[in-house]
Length: 116
Length: 111
Image (cartoon, rainbow over all chains, first blue to last red; front, top):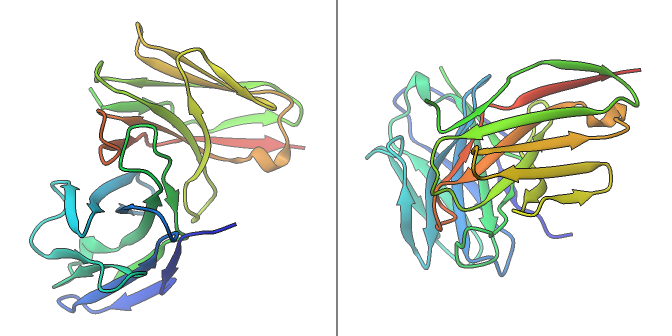
């Protein structure tokens, strides 16, 4: 069964450093997403991406965040200058359709980001 | 009022019991509804979508009450493997981007 993959599984970085989190969505899926989950808190939407551009972003997704689909398979989340409060689990997801309300999102296993 | 609200639990029930969770949502324009389960430190996994007419998948039954703006999940004959956090997920509108997760209800099944 095809699945979303994410690398690395755990990233430790120093405050102020840039990090890139990588995701390989399910091939033939058209919509891609990033979410974060701070330990003990709920899953929060960050951004959605379709047709090589951001289609929606939350207030969390400020100027220090960016997303890119550099080739036909990878989908990345870059955090330019990490803060302590960026420490969280980051989940990538993809969905097959065109972002309709019934489109099921499939989640990757997540990258745990620890900012020291 | 939170957009999606769930009782955090934990619900601690014996194996074989029936357990039910409710979830309320604040936006009456919400289009679609899902239950996900999340195991500790793992990704959310879709359990089932929730349709207006209600739907059943094996031991799991989901109901939607648009008038009262809540959805429910019923688990019958609970198994040890059902222990997890159950996340209520609501689409705010017709865009799949705008999905809102509840904080989850923790369920623990004891032998």
